[in-house]
Image (tube, rainbow, N blue to C red; front, side, top):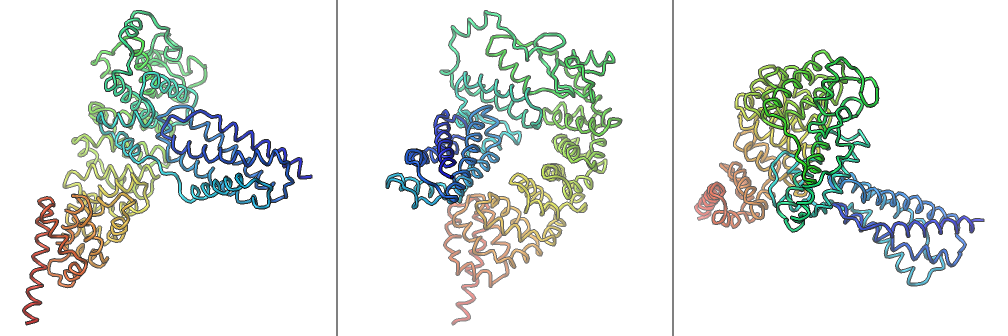
Length: 620
């Protein structure tokens, strides 16, 4: 009979709720989602306790609902445990993916609850009311996914774009990530270290980003919040004792503290000079595991390097510094080795070498010069047509990073890269398309390149990315399109490729976060006759008047510029502006807008006054 099965199920559900309720408080960026799910699950407890005590008979429908609940609560337990452990920085970088997991679990719990008919159960009135209330809460949560902290996302995006974060940004990140004390930082450094050495599935740029954030937050905590730093006495003791170097920080060959750790193909880490001597001696195996090396590329272990630096600082150990000249020679040697792999290596070696060049080009200006001087650019351009998606991503991103250097822009264009980059923009992976768009923007800073990029057919695929890309991809596409359309010929190409429709869609959807970019592009297109006609056909007057009424200073300026271009010589459009109450809005802008906005608004007001004068004369 179902009674025994039902009793077992209810007991398991009681245990699940108790285990979830006993989980510790969450102290990372997922705190709100974690707390909401835990609170709702706790509210299910009285239902299961009462069912357990009453030993009620349950029909098949209720049993199916309880089985589904048991599965959902087990998933919830795993999810809650996973976000409360490990690196807080990693959790923040994965917050959108994790938010989707919370929503999926919430949906499962709600759907399971919907199978249970509470009115037929012998429940007390108080428990019945509570379970109905919590079911409503789950329904509401199922209908709208918890949105991650927007300020946190903005701050992380700022740092991820390579911008130097200011102290206020780092203070916010420190607080939102709950990394506010020296002990917090020590736990975080251990968590990142454990993550790196226990897995090999995380992208290098993600690991590098985590390392960079850890060091920046550490500086913020120790400099900006001296009260949480270690006291002088403790510091003094720390600097006069000889701490035990963690085994993971020692090179397996020299057994010395590593200052330039690198990873070989087996995943083991060594001091660069030690493993290079081993390889130069003709060895083809990993010294520690004796496995045959798939290739001899050495990948910098930036996370471990940062962790070692943090440990040294905390323990009063001075990390030996490499001689700058020697370091530069070493970099050139490494770059030369990587280029050799691009030329004669197999597909795995090419992918690895392109990835390392991508990282080296991102790190500093000197590397960008050295890589270009070594002749890497033509080789990277060849890899843009690689059938291996990851290799293609590495190659286009390396070119993006190299193009930061003005001289490199000329080299990239001179070796015929533009058509190849456009092809990646059309056919590459999401990341490759985004970085191809960013590369075209970087190259288009040079005026003559605007012509070449437009002629190569870049604008239609940029418009595609503007419509279907990720938020970052849309921004990259928009900035590239704006820059290209400074050249008159590209304005026509963009209009004929149908750009006005998606721009109007972005302009009307304030939640999409692309209004600034859409208005800026419309303002530049409206100065061309074909652009003006296409925008006018899209019936933009109502949204333009609203932007001028309530938008940001920049958007009001661009909105008034579009309006002025459209209305010049167009009596019918001027009448629409007047009917929409635009006259008062423009007068207010003439008083409080930027200088450019005042000029454009004043121009439209003059046009409005002229048609009023004409109508008065005709009427009399």
